Image 1 (tube, helix red, strand yellow):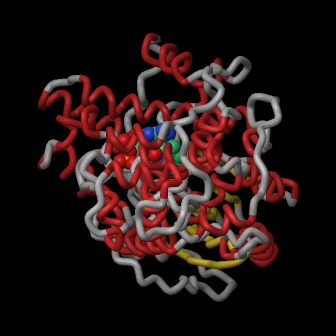
Image 2: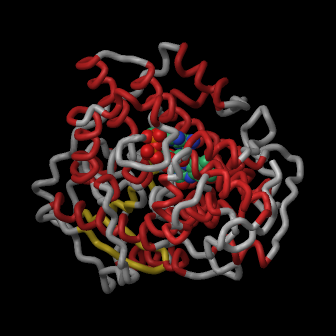
Image 3: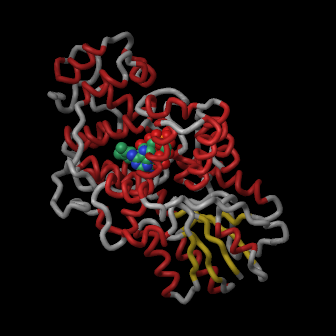
Length: 448
Ligand SMILES: Cc1cc2nc3c(=O)[nH]c(=O)nc-3n(C[C@H](O)[C@H](O)[C@H](O)COP(=O)(O)OP(=O)(O)OC[C@H]3O[C@@H](n4cnc5c(N)ncnc54)[C@H](O)[C@@H]3O)c2cc1C
């Protein structure tokens, strides 16, 4: 039997794994396993399956099942390796799955191979093929700019064309020996944003709408730092993180847009951001577990402690800094907040509260519906100074940031309506510790 193990590649198009099932003449099956440990809460109160994320994955799997029509997708919950080993003992198979991105996944694949299972991998997440990037493996660029310059200047770096979906019409899924189905957590959440409807079908619609109907790419570079609204940025991150769309598909769709409407700084900039994603992806694959250490890629110990009072207030979105609390509320309610907010949340967590950047990364990991291990940990490391940053970290001035990006307090009012009508000056004074508002005192006065 040939078994396709799906992880964050929940699509049919541009997917070499499905093609490998279609090419096989024996029995086949495809499985998604929700890891039991994602739901286990640790000593800090964190787990890995926030409600928005769970809803997105559940919807994506439902969509995939529908698109598969007669071929049944097997859904399991438990520890993936234990389940796969047990299944293999009952019914031997060769396993097809996409290449490991994080060390945890690499460890999983190694355990399966050690147990004698033939594991074949393909690429599902990155823009470039391993052959294109192999030249970087021995001397990985220390900065994004170094990577981008190589990629943009050399004719050896075209983004491969996405492959059409395999013809799965004649396949019959083999039976799974275990009880199937996933007992999803209760999910009261209903997101208003169409991009947060999980699944390849919804992601395709959103991409088409964003590029060709709404033509929102026409203002991308100017609006991408926004905090609120449907079109300030592409909102493609969840579809990319869960693999409902391949990054190659998005890239080539932008090229098609440029063919139709012409290329400009805005269309270029969306591809530029996809290169950031790519950079973090290959950086993680090159540096592995080093990224998760306190001193990250720098080898210099990063300060960062655990302060229960600060941590508790953070998790309750009650830091006493209204601008930060508004961002935390958005993140915990919807599973998303803008890049600008993420940068400021991370900067305050690390540089104002002095907390360990890795705890912040794990907090995001629980809540973000677009959680992507390389992008999340790479960005946190970057802001803390433990990552790829020639400036040794980013410390944002929150007052200045909000004056620039939420001057009319639209985001603030949306998430903290209880504050009523306040002025930016009152908020700033409160955040500096002057207690002008009927609002909790700031944990630390924001002096900057
Ligand atoms: C602390 C922190 C944690 C983050 N965690 C994640 C994460 O877990 N998953 C994730 O996809 N992005 C993460 N990002 C990057 C970025 O914030 C999101 O990709 C972006 O906000 C998603 O919205 P969008 O799709 O509208 O982005 P757009 O601005 O439309 O960008 C298009 C795509 O480019 C990629 N991209 C954009 N900015 C970045 C970036 N800085 N790093 C890597 N890729 C980028 C994403 O795939 C994104 O969907 C993080 C950023 C920070 C500062």
